Length: 470
Image (cartoon, rainbow, N blue to C red):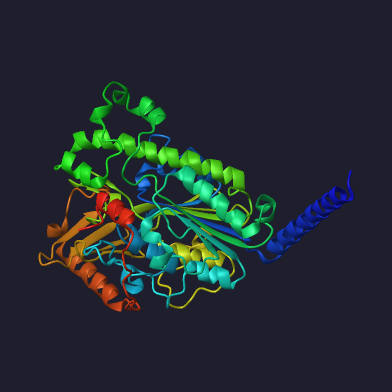
């Protein structure tokens, strides 16, 4: 054996010993201060809460997440702040409602500019909090609305800036590529030796719904004999053309495709999570979605057209066996804006005063939860101008468009919001409207930031097919 080879082997052995010592030191430090050194945030595009099996869905759509839920804390009434990606993800990463972070639009109305404003630099993002605390911050989002040029890369040391629409296997590969960029060829050993904040955003349940054939063979056997009856691989523009008046028959063809996408994502994320040890005892992992999806429940398809339950109720699971109870379920309503302060507090860091959400850490550890605490939702122009609030079992939806329509639902007896009881509960409607108006007036205005030029013709074509260009 040459001297050079002996030196290489010696260096490798010494490096491994140093790595082991560093890992042990990190573990001791984490045990001493009670804060996690690895914080992982996983969000999934277009994932409604009532189609994940750990939330009670009859079909096993999310067996891997069910495994995490058994050892974690599940919030069964978690709500997004809006019913589509730009405002919802702005809220997740800033802890602010859409009016206050400013990313309230995303349609392209003119081909020379994107109407979606960037996430303002003046705001302190979740990644910036962890970055300032010495965490290596890594972001891998699979949605073009989350490009670095639109401000979502703030605070990330490593960021998949193009954020293309890609299936879960491609996202998993990109996660590992970014980890290698951050920690070098030995990243599998090194990435957990320090402090890391990792955000992954998956796209799979979003249209077009790709056919998960093993799922369809089990739950939609008609696909095998008549695949043309199922609108697989169709973008929302084409789905609206095929089903101009969506009904139960249309839903029966679409829902198995959507379920299959969810099941496909769960399997792929499970592969990555086990490979990276994201389900480990001392890794703090939060899992949620940006919004849900309507599959003909109120006569429409897709999202961003209303604030009904199928569009705004989202899954929320926090898994950290080393620091939180196992198998706990919390039914009190909570909001997407609460995720930011919750992760910051669990990491032992200070939550900025401007954050509008509240930490759920004490709730998960047994503090009395206020079941009447209101949560709020917004949908702003050029979408239908709607506000909504839920408090207890009551949900009010108010239009700020010229019709000024108001709807009231008792979710305890009508979880699907099919029976509007506003006409028979006048006093309650007036009280809730005053509270909703007071909340809306209290929101701080967003810092102003210029729109971003659109020069990518491929992006233009993708956004047009997905319905994002007017």
